[in-house]
Length: 93
Image (cartoon, rainbow, N blue to C red):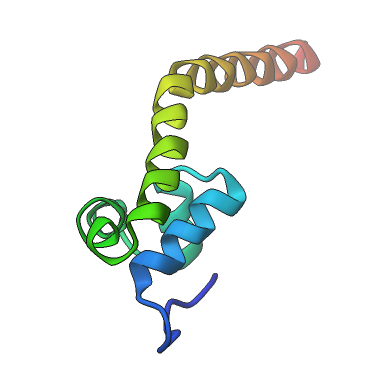
């Protein structure tokens, strides 16, 4: 788990850079830094825009793309879930 204790950079900037570098979702960033999704969202929407507008624009593009693709990720997760259940069922018979 990463720490956000850099004195030179605010947490919102650290989160923004992480999201861009890893093409991460809000959930992934929250998990990585051990903070809530609400905190990540607040930092990157409200605070980052005031702190570093260029970084904010990049982060917004990543999050918009993630939002457009989330139905695909959800479908893939459901597919994996049922494939695993099917494997378990056939291995037990």
